Length: 91
Image 1: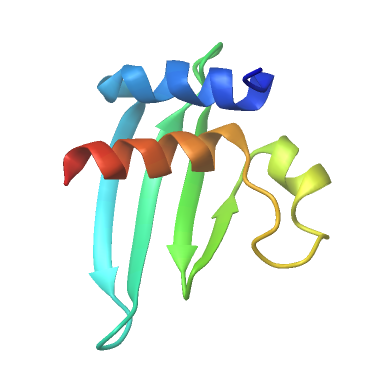
Image 2: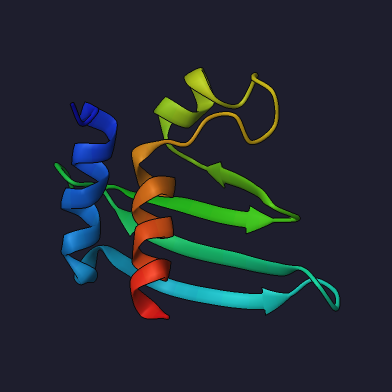
């Protein structure tokens, strides 16, 4: 059974117009930083997703309440999952 979070992430990812301002930068020789603005799947809100030093972050309330205070990297909101899926499709 697919989780609701993954289901929503797939819905976001399938609409490439939900991804704006995608920016990939080198932090150092081996690490990359990713910054992307992701539109909400059910409103006009935008969320800021970043990957720096292998740690994902998102400005959404789901990440704030369920992920920010957990062990680093142990929680991925639907916006982060959608970004990962989107980046995987770009390669």
